[in-house]
Image (tube, rainbow, N blue to C red; front, side, top):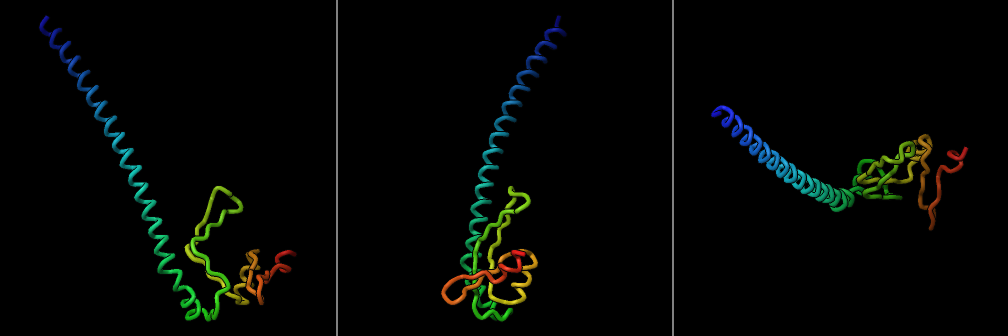
Length: 136
């Protein structure tokens, strides 16, 4: 009878310990989910700050760099944080921190080859530089 009593106590104690462990694991799981949400929020804030770095420090220097290194006297376009959807897989997006364009024949040839329209300021309005070549 004593052995059966000890075995019964062992089973009850084991069951109680398992329930406590399950409760602890569930609390830990909830805490980890909350920590993960906080971390994602912090990563998002950091990404936004990095975007501000590009906007505040990098982008204002692009005209000077384009002039010094590429001979671009005047930029026709300067875009910051440009998003482009993938034409084949519409669920995918690409983001460009900075895009700078100027009227350069080599750039127009490259864009035409890639079937991308090149635009430039003509007098007081914008014009497509390679419309006829891409249209064909």
